[in-house]
Image (cartoon, rainbow, N blue to C red):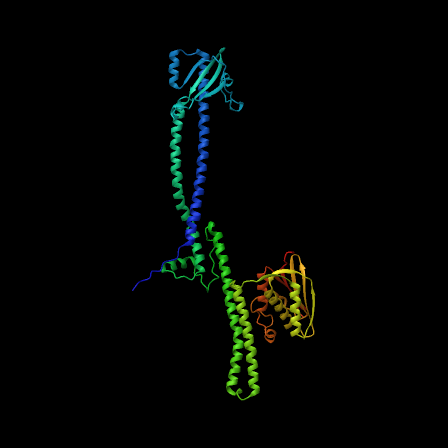
Length: 487
């Protein structure tokens, strides 16, 4: 017998966090650290160059004082001076170079401040880098005791030491940079692990897969006993790390929506069961009546048949409405969008209503307004509003339908002179199975789904419903739909 091994689904959230956030953050840290190192290196170079110049100026000042006392050194002394890195000679040509700006004229000998400086750089052609360093010289032309001297400071030894130290520093920085990529990734992964666990928990809340005992134990710790019967449990935001507060709040918000949806579904199923229980009980009662003595009693037989036909018709209407809402909730309903005049549709619905209802007075006031919508659905929503007006308006009273443009919208209004809606019930009239007066609704055959369907149709077309009602005066309901652009 072949054994089947169940493999767990890939951890897409974990992979997304790992490869999307961890490495992105690691690279950002890498480039940030690289920028810091480059800035420090540039600053170090500037400071080192300034230090070399300051040291050279101090040597020039000391040499000038010696020249004032002893004059030009002998040839033997000049050879010894070269070993220390500087030399002194008479200036025979016109000095060329630059003078120190006033901002850099630190306290030196008055004679050195006025001197001309220059920097000699060797020709790099055919020379190695180290050979080029030997030719770098800082020169100062100083006039003293009526004579002009050229003091030259050879910087090759200082530059060599600086370059070697800088190379060592660069190697250390490169090692730190490459090490930071992997060490930073590990640190970021450890830091983001709580977020990954919270994301996995949020995902598992809406999946119905099979978990291993270990997964169930971890999930139980994270969910804190959150299940279908305790959807009011929430993740404590106050005890969460500050970095996770937004995610914890988002999960709590998701749990709120899940809880509302779950409660709504439970209420919907309960109400649907209640609505179906009544006609089923009526049909069952008349069936028992027929079974007992209605077979030979024509009056009882006809009464039972009529009652069963009415109840089955009501059940059929209820089931059709439930299926309509179910398809709408699952987004399985495709709209057939077309351009048409809403006023023509309103007049058509009004004319059909007058043919089947002679107990009310009807009036209309329409202005042509074109919309892009599913004509059959808009007609269904309009009929729902008129049916409501018919049910809750006494015979002889007036029902008015009107169509007019309103700030980019098309307004279709059905106004009646009926019993009105209690103020506290107005916010709930679009809830499924809600009826302000169950006794009246039962007498008129209402299920409490009509306005829910009208609301869904309107919102599916990008519109909304307006309600204005006063008890014992009447109700005014308006469907607001986006008007079509003019051709």
